[in-house]
Image 1 (cartoon, rainbow, N blue to C red):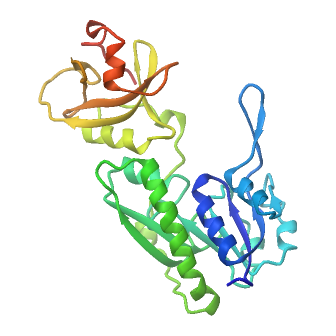
Image 2: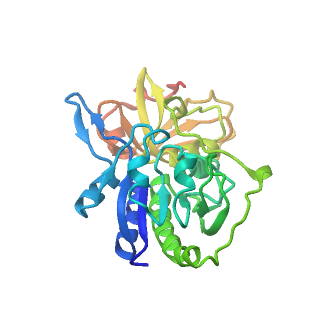
Image 3: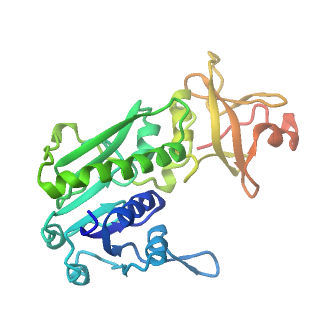
Amino acid sequence: MKDLKVVFMGTPDFSVPILKALIENCNVIGVVTQPDKEVGRNKEIVFSPIKKVALENNINVFQPIKIRTDYMDILKLNPDIIITCAYGQIIPKEILDYPKYKCINVHASLLPKYRGGAPIHHAIINGDKETGITIMYMAPGMDDGDIISQAKVRIRDDETTGELHDELQELGRKLLIETLPSIIEGTNKRIKQNEKEVSFAKIIKKEDEIIDFSKSAIEVYNKIRGLNPFPSAYGILNGKRIKIFKSVIEKNNSNEECGKIIKVEKDELIVKCGIDSIKILELQPEGKKKMDIKEFLNGVKKEDLLNKVFKW
């Protein structure tokens, strides 16, 4: 595959191992990624992780603001195939129809489940037991093209989005390299997605990060690990935001108010949920560093927390 001319489209960390694998196995002639961002008060320009890898390997980088209208420089490279992974824009038909081996996408779910930009988060938030990687032909719609290959992984009951992200990164890299020869040889599968089984994984917004303690403890627990490490779940206590990164479920049949702190001990902080409770293990108070619960409780008075209520 060393002679295969590839244009790669991607943006975040998740895409990095896939681009590196293509650089090792193919001829990557161009990289397309999202425009640079301004970060912080000083508006420091920050490159995407994919741009950094491309520059380190002396690969031409293209950063169209709107690829739907600004794509001619990409076509001029005359790629044999275009491969995308978490790029972040809808690819126009003019690009999809151009390469000899078409455009394929590496997606972090078992399509048709979880089309969209946050499939890993939603798999954990929803308490799924398995997920995986799909290699697919791209189509004009969002993640709705024909499936070429898939690989599954089990989701542990205590797994976080960060941990699953890293596992799927490696699986995506491996599956893509295994699948490419069949695409080039024309022996690959083309499986239509079942539209009756479609679900969507919308991008996590600010309003999705707050914890609703009227939900069951299992739902709260899944949300906490589903948003760990980014963007992180939080509750409001005494008017301040507290991010919660780790918890465990505590069986509890009390009729206390949802969100109420019902137990504060040396290394225990238990909050009542709609059904059962959660014990918080790791958190980050507003304006402070992340810490385990023992460190947090060492710095506060128990009576200042007991019977206080998290708001949402």
